[in-house]
Image (tube, rainbow, N blue to C red; front, side, top):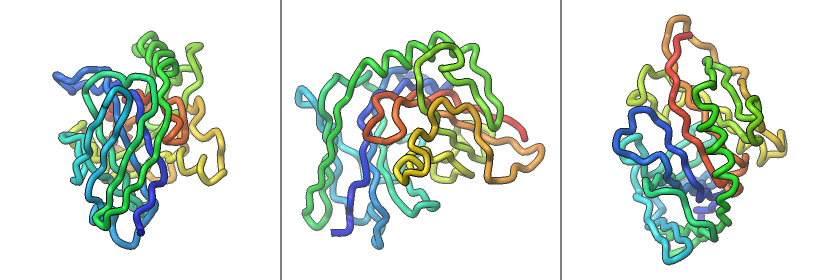
Length: 238
């Protein structure tokens, strides 16, 4: 068996993308990440299903994730690993245990579970909404909730060459601040905590427009997150 689960997410999402017409702000998502494999993980997957309290169940699709389908796999070439994400526009999750079940084409069944709590979600979302219009952004810095007396939170920064949301390709990021890997490797146990800036390891072209996406969450390990706030993308010239 070469498919191995690294970690999962089953958490609330506050979806604040400005051009997402018809989609509710309160959603949830599931994510399962895998260790690198000699054979690409998508070629080995038969099915992935998320299950939760009260008979909850939803299936992932074995396809490439896009901003349109919001369901499928994403490949990170910098770490040579795949992860699957499914965004569900159906409100926040009920509290309780959520399990992601992965069945491979060889018939192996892998599972991983986590507990979802509502209080952290509400605290971060309420603080975000109270201060949203006061938050400032540049290509390399942003306001944090802690600056306004809000709760501690972790910040995930992503950068792409893009001038609009349709051009912002999660599969082709110029760079992202992978707080999860730094935490997992023990390099920085509190990676991303109340962090409002990045030192870019890539050079920006003067005059070119870049897209910045800063996500707010309450955990820097996938399995510890109860909430992710998807802030609006910012498109700024270098």
